[in-house]
Image (tube, rainbow, N blue to C red; front, top):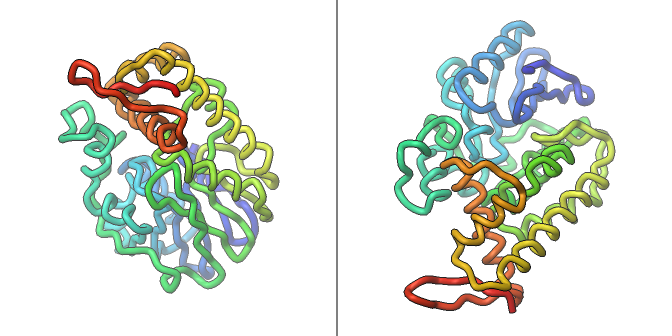
Length: 292
């Protein structure tokens, strides 16, 4: 873990729970794509930089989930690097309490205010094309989170952030976190047709061909949607649907899993309602979801 691996040319990644991209700008300077989950991850990245005599110039965050920006604060304080994040992700990086607040739907209780969901604040700036190293471009990848992006380097290496999961993860858990199901599916359809020298997803193995994995992710999204439609043949509250999803996939309930899977289930419910497959009804002062 935390081993530096070459993707192609000057494009590397650091093997970690959420892969960290590293791109050499010249012989001395590098930039990172994301920064890991916490201060400890930042320290390990710093060790790699020091061992190679590299200076960190900037961090480009793909999105603002804590496991991708957790090393921002430490690395910025240690190196003086600049940090850039796209759109609303920049606000989350600057004010990371927004993540657990959004997931919970209110002020997050103490079990949710820790590094898994709550990164340290960092002085992030809005990402724009003019701050990118020569030859690097932004790839919009909405769906998993608000304004998530990936990056293509001059070596034709593509960093895909969290726009898809490994087969192993999908087979183990059945459902993964999604903010906007419709946009997520559009992103996967786009990724399925992409070509590159190498693709580096944050939570799956680097590969030269991403199409098969993208298609597998698409299939699992539709499978989850069908499960929810089946569950909602009986009118249920959102929490009722969440309970049955946990039972269906054999997931272990915890406060963290509740907000992550709960938020995802609510996103599926919204998508299915907007597509005319579910309706909402009010009974006994409760909002219920029912399949049409």
